[in-house]
Length: 149
Ligand code: RB5
Image (cartoon, rainbow, N blue to C red; front, side, top):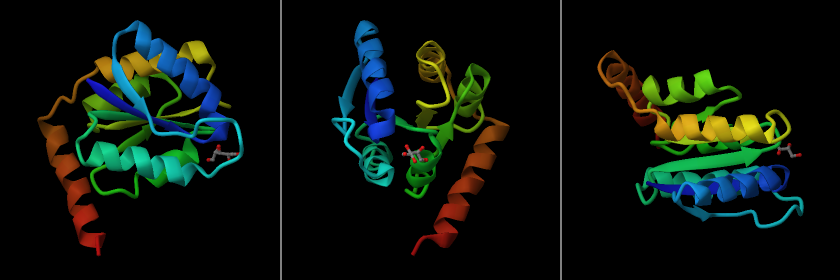
């Protein structure tokens, strides 16, 4: 499993903790920035990570900003990206099982680091259930195709 990581300045410290956490689990990852707490714009990093996941270079993405909102909205503009903003472990496994989410978004100003690591583990260990959910994912793709230029 290969993970693409990204954050803005507000998510940078939590992203660093997540990287340390992934190392302890021997999970391969690459950080697509930002690389400091200097002010920057979250769409830039959502785009970098989203492109990597949409092109299947990486299986999953993890994005962090202050709330997780801006960075998830941005990532979801990329066709093929299903970014789920999760603040609890129930949403984290449901986002994989029901929505086949391929990007996890977190808000550093919202979740503590202990909960964030549990959310990451839950997301990465859950599997898409297919079946009736597949039809719904196909409908998401149809909406994407309808509005793509
Ligand atoms: C940055 O101050 C903050 O607006 C950003 O990290 C994020 O929370 C936006 O959704």
